[in-house]
Length: 176
Image (cartoon, rainbow, N blue to C red; front, side, top):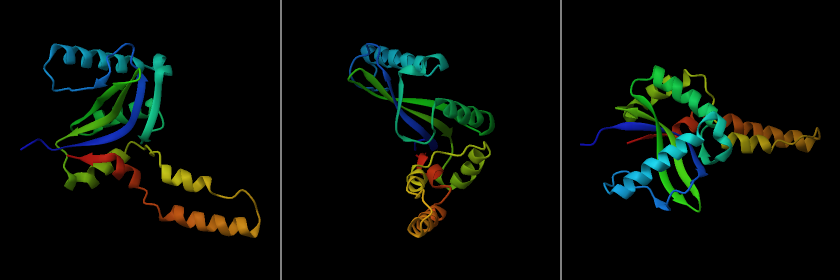
């Protein structure tokens, strides 16, 4: 039976390929070309993740964090405080001059029945995740003071109160 684990999906990103060949990345491939291409792409991504080189990154969707700095902070907290936690960069493909990859935190030996416990540990970091649904609702708040605006704002605020504060965490945390 395969080992159980969890992943917290932080974001999907694109960076310049810097000459990497096009196509999907096959991490289990044993061909010399695939191994060299994979290693070169990983070095390229790691270089773009450095603080002084973030001009070549374009955060895509979905994203749990707002930027790479927040991702690094949450990764560092997890590695120091949660058993089996480690940073993970998962290469997806290289297309049209860009490498697509996912930034995640890998949690070794964590199973679905431990979801509540893992969420409690992650929340100890003090991190408040990006919540796109809440952001969309808040953008709908009317700026005016008319009766219609006040009524509308009451409806929107009621919808905001109904949101589960754990939803962003649960959507980003996957168990395998």
